[in-house]
Image (cartoon, rainbow, N blue to C red; front, top):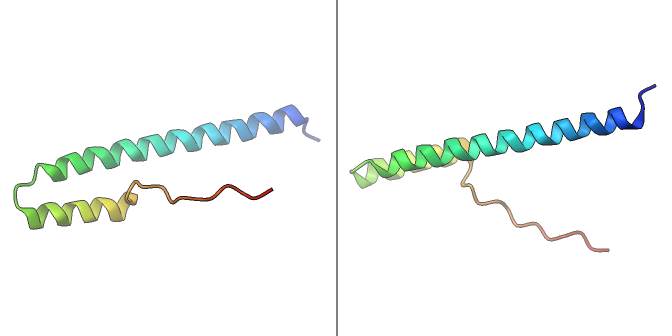
Length: 69
């Protein structure tokens, strides 16, 4: 049987890894959006931005109301 502290450590490691992945995706998305902004033609620039948003999402988190008590 696992001790409670080992389970807690496993959960903490999972959460830290998730946060790291979110930061990496955010950085990649922002870099690609900056590259899209360098495109001169507005139609191609919008297409590029749409592709980035499709890959990573718009970057705007969905608003969630806190749970009611």
